[in-house]
Length: 137
Image (cartoon, rainbow, N blue to C red; front, side, top):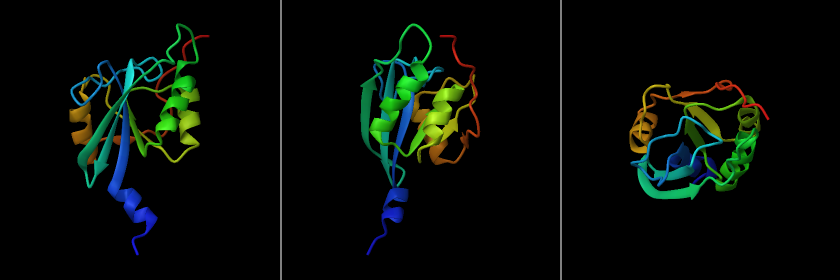
């Protein structure tokens, strides 16, 4: 019998905050909560099996966008989140789940496919703490 843990390790759902229209060619957004969209890529044995785009409707003009975006991310049930920056409230909320948060180096300006390739090669580090300051309310 195949263990559930083994199956989960073979299938990953990786979410990226991105610019519209989303998808593999879209650039990863520098902002998490205020990104235009989220692209989720399902990987089976490190091969892309599905790409979904969800527009981010949680981006208000004032503070709290990150925490609201967390609810969207959690509803997607991903295994991993890859981004440039995330504030402390959003980081703490996601960190309470099983979702692993990976941080891209600011200045790289990668599209999702490029970031995914780096992820599959093990070249993106897990974030240990938030790396953005919160926006004022």
